[in-house]
Length: 390
Image (cartoon, rainbow, N blue to C red):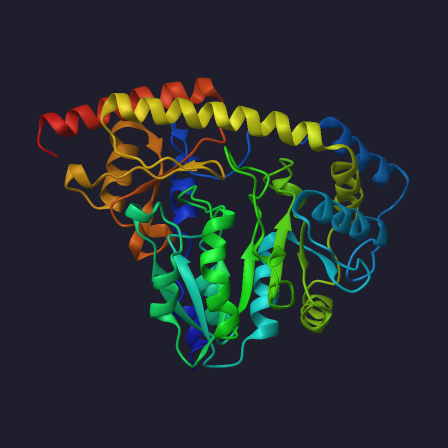
């Protein structure tokens, strides 16, 4: 028989995050700190609106781009929070999570051989989506000494005549790093001068600490060359509702919408009605969750300092990315040994790119009580490794 599989799909490795999630789900008394899943329930008034939409029989398809009512609220929200202006009719579309928006943007914008600059460590989907769209991923390895930010020189060093797209994954998963207004100013003229387009994944935009999120699309000359991707999973604890959105120039959005029409049809209808409620009345919920995440962040950073575990301070998302280089193990070995010996699941840094070697990702989207119990086991593990020289 001939090979039934496409060659390019066989080159893509399965998600390194799910590997540990699947193991820990079958391990008794294990604690998982591996999945970026808010421990909060979706706020009741948002759930109630989703339930109400079902009770009213709103189980039909919406338009491909989404409910007009919701697109207006998205446009209002982005203007209110980040100073961005989009026409709800032609420059906003709803997707099945932010991940579909990423995939659609790549497929709409890339021709075979076009290069995509992907700063890593970063979310696991960018590189495979670029490959599946026929593009060529070019990895920019972010450095801990730069707080895992993308620097001007790193950008310049990786641009070629084939470069078309730059992924901006900030606030960053897995590192928690952010790009401030000053950081972005340092690269904007390079992007414009070299005629690049940007996929700005801002799914964690509401989860920043000590700094207000700034979108690169808000800079002069950048709106017309940026696709902003966002969603409801992280900010509103709505992961299972599977709802995101893409915003950008109509010339690009029309083509992403075409892909969406044939591959998806529309985002879940009851999720869209719930999201209208989230955007209209969910600011207090976001602030409450952000405050809780910040407390957990501070708690983990102090605990790491006390146990001698090096970790730069993250200012966004809900992850910490401590260095484990002192233990003489690879990231995968550290994660496997920690899971086997102490039943704690973390994610090896290499799940987010080769530059993640020497680090592990720990999510603090868990209660303080769970984090305390997990930290006791982690400290016991690293004390044992220190005592025996790794």
